[in-house]
Length: 207
Image (cartoon, rainbow, N blue to C red; front, side):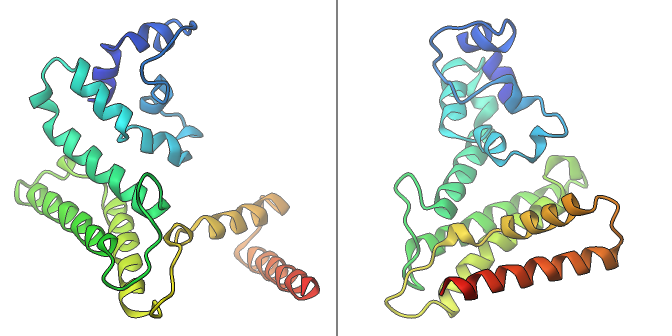
């Protein structure tokens, strides 16, 4: 749907189909945002742009019928706010108390997805919602961050919720794969152990 709206925008003629130069109204949007390849599917930034402010504005100004995009716009606003909270950007800040407004916004985000999922299940059509793995990832990321703030954040302290992802784990496994692309489970365990030991030793030496 987002791609359909973007193709009606002048930007599509500048960059989408012809690849030419020119002043763009929404420079963050491109064909790469909507048409993924195996490599670009792993780029979180491109996924976020499909639900960002630029996408919402593009739909509002160029979609043939904005009413048709009402659900898309709602999802975009919810997702965009979730990303801003988790990255502490665009007016959002690091959570500094168990009753911080962002904590309740995270629970509202989970409630939104739960209700959407329940509607698709009631209609017995799983294609009306996201994959189950995506639902679990979104919910556990939001709930986990909120619960850490509510149960483990000391009074007067601040948490950096942007560090709560799994990027560091993915980077560690990537390093292990680069060292031996044909490694077995035992080989990977050994490589991971050596990487962890090296990291701890470097921390020790730096003190």
